[in-house]
Amino acid sequence: MKILVCISNVPDTTTKITFTNDNTEFNTAGVQYIVNPYDEIALSRAIELTEGGKGTVTVINVGEAANDPTVRKALAIGADDAVRVNAAPRDAYFVAKQIAEYAKDKDFDMILTGRESIDYNGNQVAAMVGEFLDIPSVSIIKKLDYDGSSATIEREIEGGKEVVTVSGKFVASCAEGVAEPKIPTMRGIMSARTKPLNVVEAVTIEEVTKVAKYETPAPRGSVKLVLADQVESLIGLLHSEAKVI
Amino acid sequence: MSVLVYVEQAEGKFKKSVFEAVSYARAIADQESTNLTAISIGDVAESELKELGKYGAAKVLNVSADQLKTFVNQAYASVIAAAAEKEGADIIVLSNSFSGKGLAPRIAVKLKAGLADGAVELPSTDGKFSIKKTAFSGKAFAITELTSTNKVIALNPNAFGVKENATEIAVENFAADIKQSDLGTVIKEIVRATDKVSLPDAELVVSAGRGLKAPENWGMIEELAGLLGAATACSKPVSDADWRPHSEHVGQTGISISPNLYIAIGISGAIQHLAGVSSSKVIVVINKDPEAPFFKVADYGIVGDAFEVVPKLIEALKAHKG
Image (tube, rainbow over all chains, first blue to last red; front, top):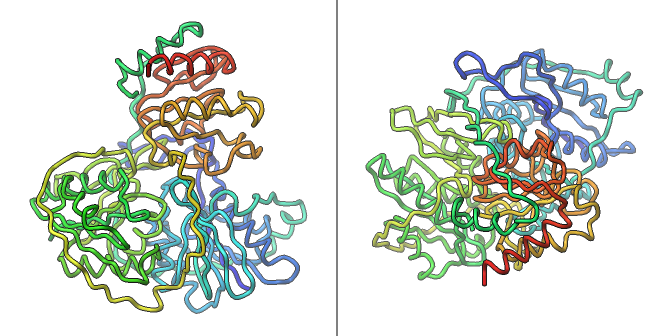
């Protein structure tokens, strides 16, 4: 079994998000980068599925050399080898095309991603890779079982879940529930240094989106406090002032 | 050029988020001085299809092929792309629902289109077609320009609102060409909790955190939510401890929501939690710690013990509803 896991290099979840250059660029000063938390879930499930010599896990990242520590982290968690497509990740369309180009002749049984990256929140790459490769994709999955040729997958829907089966190659984007994120062991960290990290060049593709500017949410006014023994006045405020109930 | 809106059905019915997507698509069509067509896939009665006219759709293409009764994103994407081509539509709108998230990227690739997902406003009219969308898990917005000829927009639920715009609507059957290779995923089972409000598109949300101390204390949260007609949610530590299901976890690594009212009970307000809920229109915080960071972003607050405040709130709400 061969699994490809797509990983994104994202700011740590505690990062205060600010912008520079007239709000056109993300301010990377002092930012710690991590493997996108959802991608860690995908990677952890891939490792579980291939454990005990049942297969191999390759991780792929589209990014510049500065991403290598994040890629090594994925190797430390337990991936067997890694590929970095050497290009700035312009948008999901660009990233998905690079992953599809790499994967098209490599015979992966499945390609896993996280449900979204916590920076651009796209939910796009998995389904786009599926479309570029003309294979099925299932987005935002909560459970993944694989019997060697077909997968049984639970995906989230509004107010419930859907159980789907898919035979043959597929792509899926993983959410919480698919696996507990694995933490690198000391042995994993040591061996990650010598595992293969291949760098490949990007293919060209037309531009379809660009970020013109960023905005931060407007600050809220100060909080209006209601005394704990006058909760009925909160109901009054929500009804007649905020008009939400 | 024209606008095509995909109207997602669930068990033959359209939800509010669909009417919202139609309202939004109508507004885009007006901005661009063009037509709006809807496309529905699956078993939907004509009377339900005609409901779309209330929100500005002048035509709905009805696709009712047997193989497409349940959602298969690959085949649905092919049908929608084919309809876009036939209608000469260059702007495709859909709701950023769970299914929409699996569908929009495939449509975008088929049409070589830029995709703005998580859109919260109408596109700009300065000729650049830039759209405000959520980014950094609610900590920011990215004004994203769609530079391609074709464009796909997935609208966040509750971002635009439903706007009535009564229009005479024509229902047209649309014969879809279905490729066998597009039917690779097969649905075995659909489980829906029908007695609960679905969290992603809920207008009101009651959420609780570690301050509730134990899973058996959620009865009062459920009761409060039931009285309000609200969905229930929780913080990450609560779902991590399996007190509540992961599907209720809101925050940076859970789901992001933007209800009209978010009531946070016993949640301190860590930056990761705030990321997922900060676009809520009104935030109420109930916490016994007056220094809880959540109060800094709240509109209304009560400093007090949840176990005393929530039962009183339930009584006050019952009295209010008479």
